[in-house]
Amino acid sequence: MRHLATFADLRTAKAVADYLQTQQIKNDISPDEKGWSLFILDDAQLEQAQQELEAFLNNPYDQKYLDASWIRSQNAQVYPKSTKQNKLTRQILRGTGIMTRLVALMVIGIFTLQMVGFHPWIYQYLGFPVTLASLDFIEIYRLITPALMHGSLVHLLFNVFWWIWLGGKLELEKGGAFIVNLFLASALAAHLCQFSIENASFLGLSGVVYGLLGYAWIAGKLGKLKLYIPDGVFIMMLLWLVIGFAGVLPIPMANWAHLGGMLAGVAWAWFEKPTKPV
Image (cartoon, rainbow, N blue to C red; front, side, top):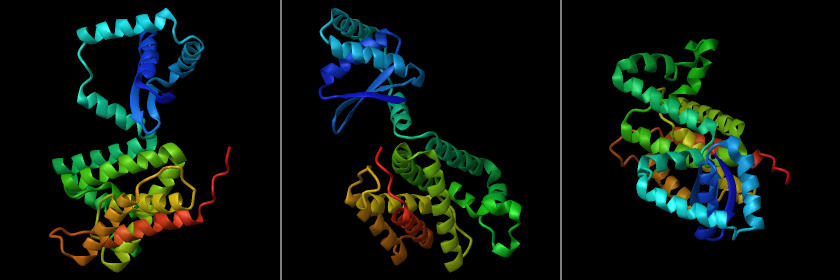
């Protein structure tokens, strides 16, 4: 899915979108802070769509654009509208990169295996080692893999939401290699922190989520990130961290993992070299 153009008004966006549909170029319109953005669903059709857009801009009142809108309005009465599930899928695809999706699928897949009876095997081979001295070099991945495991459906949904929402935005701006490296650094820092202060009994993507938040917060303040996230989001997550340490919740929380992951993200943002303007 690729961005084609942003229009100030919906009518113009619809005119282009309708004509592209008649040319078998599948697209989707989405509102944003600048107006109405038009996305091409098939990357291979982007060049053709750009050519059609240029033709439209040169002659927006051509009869063929009016005809296309009429045809589309008639078809809308014949064919069923997109389901909410399809719209949600398009939103996720548009707001994430390939690495964000892969991690989300891995987390969901592992949780599914846990639920159908493979949890002893998963805890044995993916859980954090009881002692670092007992860890073979070939098992070094176990320093990271607890982030892919979850103890409940609520735990899973909470973390996957944040991963897709924030991780997807970061990947689209900074790239797939960046989000993978930040995932690894945040997970490692979170897990080592929790293990060294408490024990090896922890799991979940929360430490990584806090790493993403810590990075986005500081990188935004330092002008190293275009992505804007309201301060209220970070304040809410910091309050959740404080509540966890206060021990007033009836559920166990890996608070030191949260703190370790966040500090890793903050450190990454602080020492990251600013991107040179193109």
